[in-house]
Amino acid sequence: MTLMAQKQSVRRDILKARRDFHDSAAAQAATKAACGHLLELLAPHQGKAIAGYMPIRSEIDPLAAMAALVPHGPVAVPVIEGENLPLNFHRWDHKTPMETGQFGAMIPIHAQPITPQVVIVPLVAFSRAGHRLGYGGGFYDRTLARLRAQGAVFAVGLAYGVQEVDSFATEGTDQRLDAVVTQAGARLF
Ligand SMILES: Nc1nc2c(c(=O)[nH]1)N(C=O)[C@@H](CNc1ccc(C(=O)N[C@@H](CCC(=O)O)C(=O)O)cc1)CN2
Ligand SMILES: Nc1ncnc2c1ncn2[C@@H]1O[C@H](COP(=O)(O)OP(=O)(O)OP(=O)(O)O)[C@@H](O)[C@H]1O
Image 1 (tube, rainbow, N blue to C red):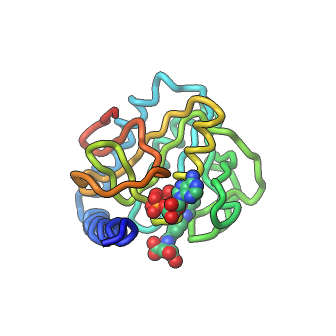
Image 2 (cartoon, rainbow, N blue to C red):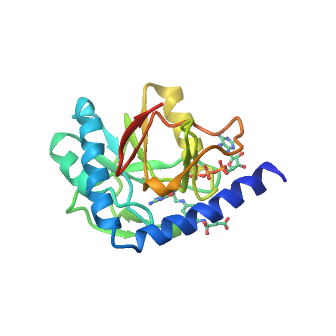
Image 3 (cartoon, rainbow, N blue to C red):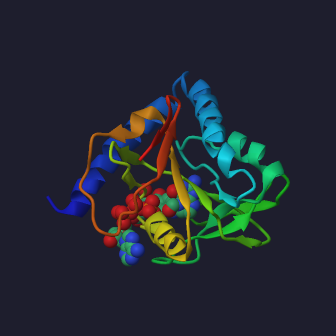
């Protein structure tokens, strides 16, 4: 099996598990618990520019944590600039007028670009070693590579516990996470 086919097979299995959990009665409490753990983990980073994301499909919803961070410093959300390009981040708060962006995630109508020092990363699957798999566009891999080339960045994956896998095949461009937060707590890598 090629590397891409192996990743695709993990994506398919974990997306089903994520969807099932997201649709279950346990999802709401898990989201609340994970947002609490995320805020605790990010307390030492308060005041830094922080990128979150607008959830799509069965992704865990980070908005409660993002809203709590807004009074402390700039919060931003990802915006696609084009295929094979890193993401940009535009400033967000709960009053920002939004429109639907590519692939369905909401983006601010008026762009206020931000360079984040902390990135809350959406993901499909994560491994015990701190690797992540997204939807396969390579957007976050390119984005974290660029941010890390520019300076220190703390990348924290946010996920339901069911998205963990022992390991999966990786390639050189796969960017590791610094931490993952689930409803069970935060893990540093
Ligand atoms: N909430 C959220 N916002 C985000 C991302 C994300 O993963 N989550 N992104 C992170 O990159 C970017 C959006 N990128 C995305 C890229 C692909 C697909 C997607 O659904 N892909 C198809 C397969 C596409 C194809 O290969 O033709 C799929 O999974 O069905 C979704 C989002 C920016 N914003
Ligand atoms: N920095 C990079 N430069 C060039 N190509 C890259 C880079 N990062 C990733 N890629 C390529 O992008 C493609 C998709 O990568 P991958 O399958 O790891 O995406 P993903 O991590 O699931 O997606 P995302 O990062 O958007 O969540 C792969 O072909 C990979 O080689």
